[in-house]
Amino acid sequence: MRKHILVIMSLMLMGFVANNCQAAEKNACINLEMVFNEYQKTKDEEAKLTQIGEEKQKEIDVKLKEIDQMEEDMDLMNDSEKEKMKVKLDKKMEELRQFDRQIRADLMRQRNEIIKGILDEIDNTVQEYGKSKGYNIIFNSRTAILYQNKNLDITQTMIEYLNKSYKKRKK
Image (tube, rainbow, N blue to C red; front, side):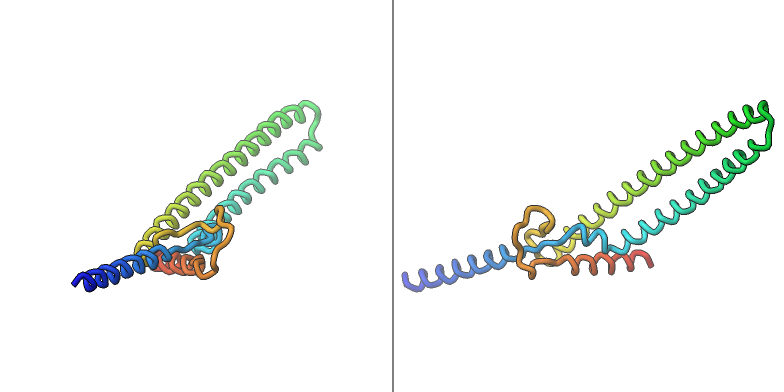
């Protein structure tokens, strides 16, 4: 009877150890930078910002043409008119510099907000994915990992997962 109890306890212990070892092996890593860069939402948002930047550059170009025209007109003026035009020209130049600074600041702020939102979304999706697939730990492969088995890298899987869920939400 005592042998049977020891055998049963041994089998239970082996099963417990085997389950814990398998659970401990359910780790993965992703290259977060690559996931961010290959995520379609990142590309879409970057394209939107680029378009906004190009539209603002067109506005700047129009203002620069106005300034160039004012400079050309100055050449044909007498000295008193040139002084008045110089004041207007200086004012236009300062307005253009302020406009340019404001555009750059707005675009940088928008970009930072977009990046933060996308990184938060990726973080939440990685956590959701990790829980649903039974991972114990998912590492960012760009931080202090000196060696990793390539089988642990789920970067491409995460990119596909994110893009698939993004397409669903976009529809």
